[in-house]
Image (cartoon, rainbow, N blue to C red; front, side, top):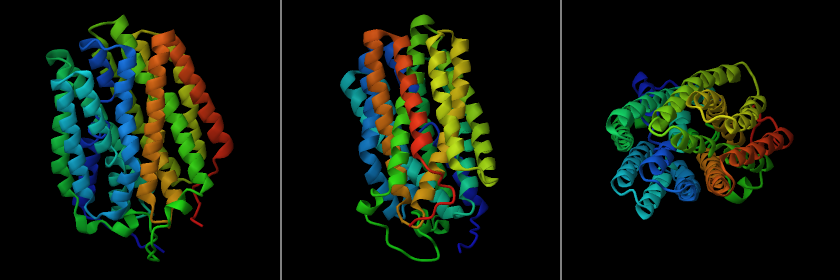
Length: 405
């Protein structure tokens, strides 16, 4: 049996702080890049789709190495700090040299750096609080993460309105530097590095071979569901931002910031609610099905509006879906990897699946827009999201009480 871990208040507050500061850093500039390239630099939709996808592809390539690195190192705090600083450098490259080659290079840098951050934070969390308190800790992480995104989106909208879109990139750079300092609050001696990679504390074990890992059907089904989730979801907000930049030039960045702020507020509450539901014994599968069911509804609604108010209202649904995914995906990965020593690798594989799905979403939807228009592209993503819902409902078992075999 695992003993209850009691990390210091300083480490726990440091973990809270890193989730706030890293909120805007780990995802780079996200949909703001789409608005910046469309509105300020006048890129076409296909080129924007490629630029958005490069970060996802780069992240995908580095996910498995990042997971293995986090599993194998005790310098997890350093990994977070260095990754954050790389994101800051990439943002400066984009705003200083907003041309196709430099932007793709910067996006590749952002993707590589951001691959490390989520598994490192999850590993530190598990190593600090232990498995018994992990559900609540991940829920708290996500709540602070969304609160950080809320703060960053508000600042981004204000800076963009008064000083120009370029200041969004400077804001992310400032968050990156701050995150490198905040991570030092977490005491490295309080992180159980064996527990942090998914080992059971009762028995010391070597991580299972990768070949054995990929023979686990439940893991493969889960990763496929993650790909489909993000395939149906990732391009929706960037496309909505492009629609706003065409229909309401000059107000697109403010509206996009309002979208992100509204969604992040919902995500804070949803992440808290998911943590409460998990603590009361609700399974992972029904909670995840709610997130998947939201996506087709959101896609259909986007077909019928170009109003900034309408787009912001629809983004509340994204708050529900993303708030659930951020918590439940980590919990499912922890369930599947219990006792294997491969928890952070599973986090990397999950992020790889996210990257593949996001890349497919951005690239294919970008060209659907170019050839057939925005309404058709939203219908296209709605179909993919519906397939994701059906696949997960049929193929994925409940994992809450699953133990590694």
